[in-house]
Length: 427
Image (cartoon, rainbow, N blue to C red; front, side):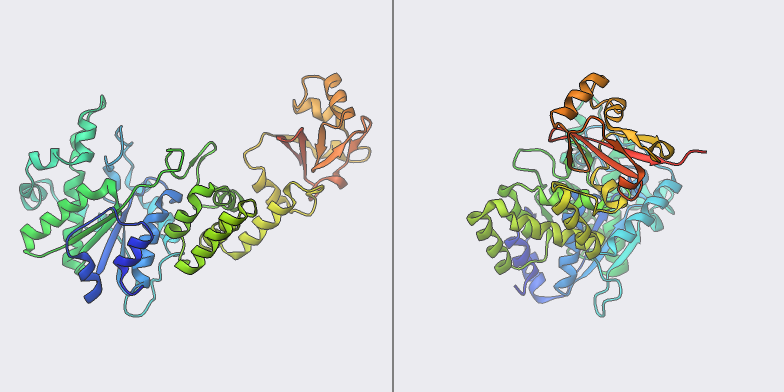
């Protein structure tokens, strides 16, 4: 496809757009921006649609700008929120901005000839405004009635929490962002999720009133799962792009576990695969869903983009042996990633030397069984596994030499209840 508008439409990424945007994409190079809220030092999978929006824009020859809201982040966007966010300090915002920039660099090319990506911080201008000047130069162009009609404001007014003046002013700040980018970089398009439409149109109005110029907006649908839950939220919590917050194996598994009903849509929205490749994967899902070829392609594409090809290989190796007879071929880091959210117990490494630790005693100690008697019965019946190997000898002892990397034992009761035992050196 030669027109970005057609590409976004095919991928299901247009919910609303201003009139004439398709024609503008077809005849000129556009500079567009999207804002990122620095409430944490890492982005999460819920922001990937936004990141990919800028990446697609750049691939079609247009110029992307990522605003990291160092200024607005100190206020908080009320859009889609039922309660006011905790305000951040300037130091917290600066730390978060640095983390986000590093993650954006995995998707955007900042050295590309002709249309390099830019990262700007709206604190560069918002932090320098004085209150009277801002009210005079921006606030006077918006009526309170206009602001009350915006969904982000009206929804909060209907809630018990209400909305503070601080958050009420957010729309004006974002509108000012658009005007500043128009003046500095001739930016004429803002993109985002549908919850940003009110903020985007406010910026368009400000540019029209102050500069007599035409600007555009484009928003995509907010993503939910087939069960109606918010995308990117799991029982274990948010799936982050930061490997320290969400291990690459967990990130890979998140995409691998995508429902068959959603996987084709996710391939369109989150990858650069073309229509032919996605159609082939869609057919594979219909013909042999148990092979999960589409899910594997999705997991590979995104894990490679976020964490690199080496982490994909490690995740796939870990997945292949996780339910095999022996997981001893995994390294310590991989085992910790696989079992990062299971209960764990530290045991002095000295206990595992020489004769080792009695299996029955250990099962009872980590409370996989309520007593030694029950632990003995579990082992005798074959209900206890060590490093995925079924154990049935009640006299078995576990030594440091048998531990993964000399450090870890994975105990399992039945098919699902895991417990990680870590051997640690003590003084």
